[in-house]
Amino acid sequence: MFRFFLEREKDRLKGPDVMGWLKNAFAIKKPGSVELTPRQEEIIERLACKVIEWKMSVPAVLFLESMKPLNYVGSQILVFFSPIVNTIFTVRDYDEFVALMEQRESVEVLLRRIESKEAAGETKAAAGEEKAAVGESKKPGA
Image (cartoon, rainbow, N blue to C red):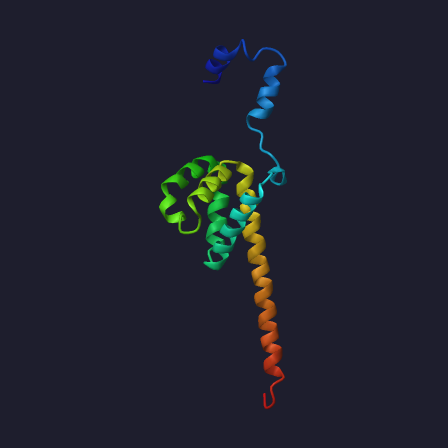
């Protein structure tokens, strides 16, 4: 199959251009290289907050990590789920979210946002439990 491709494209791929094409054919940008608009930031923030609120961070992270190689196909499947997702987003925001998920790097941004919010929530919960324990030990007769 590759031989067929080379035969078909040999005029276009002659010379040093071949290596440049191959180098960029499967290139993946670094996770920090994605530039999000303020609207996209807000959409990712809202989605991460809902995931944490619904206590679905572990399944969400597992799903996103396993589907990372298929993010473009997954973004197209989101069109199918639009009636469900429209409970979180407006139609305009949802279209922006689908376009955002077509970029491979945006999945990593969403993963990091969910994980950081989960860690912040665990830290707050631990601090709250510690305060409650200290408050109970200070009660007279305890």
